[in-house]
Image (cartoon, rainbow, N blue to C red; front, side, top):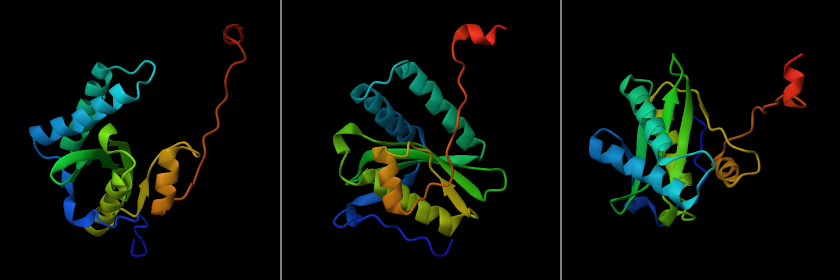
Length: 169
């Protein structure tokens, strides 16, 4: 807890950036708009705006049950990035969810700033001992998280059927 150091270079952003816990409908709509604009800019097969809305509603319900919070990062008063941070039952482990920078604000360090500021807040204001972000090892997101001081601690291994008929016998 005490040795976390925020590694991102955020020179020039500090006075104009604010981390806000989503606590009203207007803020929630800003966070949802970031997610929907992200989908429009980078469509994913099988993912629809309705799914994004449903998923976001589920995250807000979890936040309302006390399992975590949704956060906005603003720059000069404008919402530029958002994510959730949710905790296990005893509050010692937090997991980032859906870290998204609005397409118009990408490549300016806002995802790094959001994750770093939230980590600092979390370690100072909660009992969390560990924060987790799930990402692909060689992804842009993975590189951002590594620069912040996150380290790979596990990998996932899967078993896939050779062909559909192999499941029948």
